[in-house]
Amino acid sequence: MIILPQVPLYVIAIICGLLSFFVTRLSMPRIIKKLENADIVGKDLHKSWKPIVAEMGGFGILFGFIIGMFSGIYMHDLLAFPLCVVLIVILLVGLIGIADDLLVLSSKEKLFLLFLAGIPLIWAAPQDVGILYLISIPIALSIGSNLTNMLAGLNGIESGLGIISLSSLTIACIILSKYDVTIISMSMLGALIAFLYFNKYPAKIFPGDTGTLIIGAAIVSIAFIGRVKLIALIVLMPNIIDAAMKFYSAGVMERQQFKPTQVDDEGNLIRPEQGFKSLIRFVLRKPISEKQAVRIIWSIGIIFGLIGIIVALTMPGVLENKVLGNFLHFKETFYHI
Image (tube, rainbow, N blue to C red):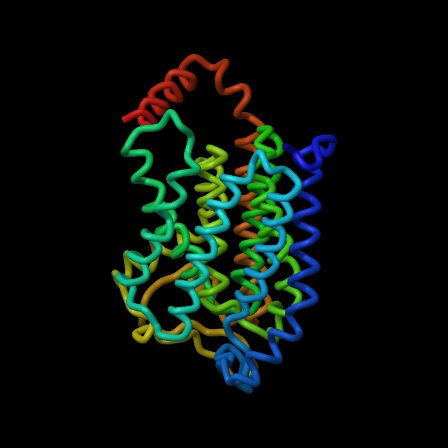
């Protein structure tokens, strides 16, 4: 039985997004206070005065997302099974983020645990796919979660990029009539928008791995359930470029080996003379303020987000093109292997 059969899916998605926004917005001040009282804090190294800021703000994002998703399940229970699967996956990824924030997991441990967390997503995959496609789901979730976790460290950069990516992905899904997965994207989007108010410069709280990992997990879940993997790949391109630069310049490094970006006497960020390359350090070819650096990274995210939307707009015409149509037919065979 559908609880609200007269309400379109996109309206339900908007309701879920609004609920997640208000839950996160109202809960964050108390979460910040509780984290500070529990001494779950860290130094903001990118400011000359090194303020002490609450960490693990992903609790608030996760809380809002859960309420949004439960609302979607209640309002349209024909989608209850895939939505519950995604909710379980995001909760597992959130738990891994909590463990990483508190215990500092190694890269191998985190990748393996994220792979395990992505296994339940297999049960929400389309029924007509093969074993290779199914195996690729937890692998993609593990990689995608780490991508949104790596491009981080500046006030608002993670939550802002998450908002840009999920906004673009949501618009693309609406264009392609993938209204079911907009419940997932809007639930995460609403929570991130509310969180950004507290995470933007000067940050009152950091998301921690608890927050950054679940952003990537949500994007990958939407990509596979909604079959919008190409668009998800495009909107994640800033994170992919950042990861590629780091791996090319330094291989796999643990966070303890990272030398943080430095701050000059005027409060501008300057990159170290030696060390790994990254998208942030590419932006810091000359000293600029933290706010400027974040805005440039956001701008890069917006460019790729717009490309993703343009791709979604052109997709209906792709099938009319014989060459591209044959390519898509070839790609479809992968699903059945």
